[in-house]
Length: 413
Image 1 (cartoon, rainbow, N blue to C red):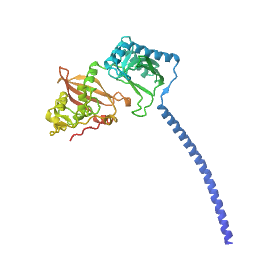
Image 2 (cartoon, rainbow, N blue to C red):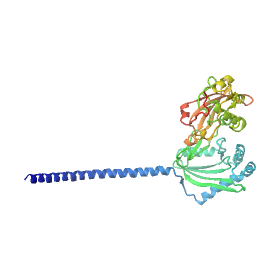
Image 3 (cartoon, helix red, strand yellow):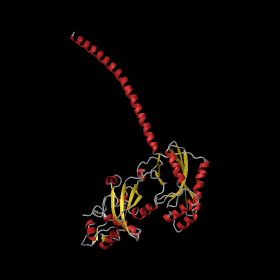
Image 4 (cartoon, rainbow, N blue to C red):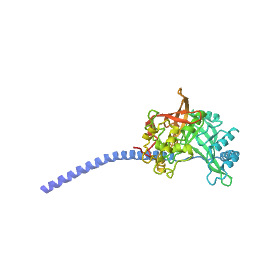
């Protein structure tokens, strides 16, 4: 009797559990279905967003008509042929890769400008000639108007460029062609393409910047920069002589605050290289100064550009009385490979009452697509013979630290 009663209880209990399981399972099934549908929708949405993001990194090529292709090729070949005489004179004797001087590039640009071409130099040291129509077009484009324009460029590598820009609903289509002369003097087409750029900007300073596709990293940077609005020629001249040769390459002259009352933060030992290159046209080598730079060589060069006493310089640059040398380390590849390469641009010059000149400098950073990554003010004291001495640098150091990764090559005790 007890066994039958126990069996009955088990059966009833089983039926109740089965009912609860089915009921819970049924409710759970509906809930799981909703969650699964939402999850699938989320996954599909994520996949679509991922695809969109990935597509941003791809070049958006657009099929050209035969007329567009012929026109782009003809235009770049025409300007190259016009410059052939200057090019061949400059490239004579050079084999394989040609390296033109800035002077020759500017001569070719001036020649094209005399015929009305809007033309610029690819080295950021030259004002675009016949720029007004290009500037006007870009102003209209910023307002969303459907406009188009074109311009040309030449670089020191001996490559000629043609760009046709078409703006539609704030998007930019770029048809471009480039050409070069081969070793036999034959004109060859290098690039012929039409793309829809990832994004573009025309800055208040007059820089036209576009990103062909979204840049994955610094090594795969896709930005294109051209200055359209002209810079004051005096600003360009001062930049060329006093700022660009030093720049931000393996030294900290323009990335820290200092003046003639306190120059303790300047790494003169690292600065020696760039000042040496300004004087001699090439960087010093380890063979020249193994074990350090002789005191008279180091001091005469630094004091050429700074009003600093020998005693102060020896203190700041770690002069070794025993060897009568200053510590120094040659620039090697690993010193500059992690550093971005901002390009300093002098945008304003001011004559001060005490006879000094203050230059307002803004650093262009190609990899970030910006015409001003940080600002600083450099003051110099210029003499009638054309020589000058650096007086001070004023900068927001935190802005610089976010861009540069300067590390002294030659720490001084």
